Image 1 (spheres, protein in one colour):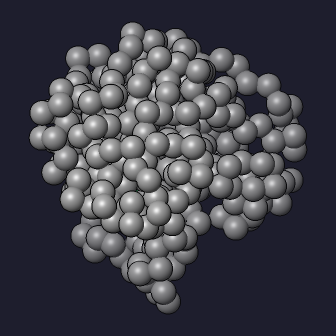
Image 2 (cartoon, rainbow, N blue to C red):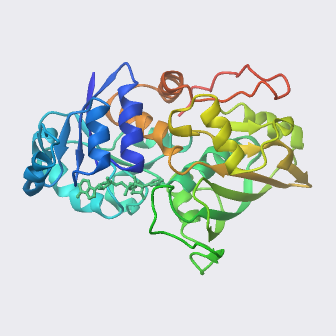
Length: 355
Ligand code: NAD
């Protein structure tokens, strides 16, 4: 059993904790939170031992009626690995604390790549964990792009990828973010930082990105154009991507026209929190003009990095091969949507075992 601590129990941390708890080879020793708010109450209600991330605040938890099992120091003394899910920049500040306790750490994409020995995506860079003592799971956007660019590059070769990212303004619980009535270039400079982040996973793929922010909370939307080295058929690309367990090929006849319907579908089929762990690619958007491939995909920013964190734990702490880890994670969580409405839907071929 790999004993796991989660430091930072917000949008990502609470999902990572649940995903780790679902693994037969892992256990959640506890979760650490900075303040005794509704999230802390939810952690206790879900059966997690709660730790005060900031030792001085332990009394505040007790005063609020939320018993803590100890402080972050106590949690670090009891785990094999910590998953840092703190707000961007706090992970970097926590690095020395993890090192002082000699606990390997996994960070999130809001941190600079330099925070960890290697950046991680199970599809694109599982092997990077081999000689690492710490990993950084790349952002939701970089995860979503790596998952489709890796198979395209392996199969056809990528000459150049150009992606426009329409990013959600904030997560549903983030009342203080925006914009509320505009679509703004963010950053205004092109290319954006997302392309270089994808290159921490796929260093040889030439990719430029431009990004905007929109007043939506459900998902990011990517408009993807890839010039391939070989000319594929649209049908072959559809089959290639549909074969990836972490890509959901949205069938045309499903009547899913955007993030609202996607999240509705996820909730209706019983996904926890309505989460979509998979990239969601519109099948009919996949078009080929010569060597140019076009497609639209949506990425659920709160969820797509969650199975990646589980694989990052296994990659960092064990010798489990990529295909085995991904299959275990997918099976335990139920990752891999095959709509009954897709052509011949229902059966997936297994992932290849290379890493
Ligand atoms: P969040 O604000 O929802 O959650 C962070 C949690 O950490 C909060 O509960 C906060 O109270 C707590 N916290 C604050 N300071 C702390 C401290 N010193 N010690 C312990 N806990 C502390 O943030 P999030 O959206 O879950 O993001 C976490 C990381 O994941 C960031 O690096 C972010 O860039 C990355 N990420 C976020 C998303 C997303 O869409 N939300 C997607 C992918 C990656």
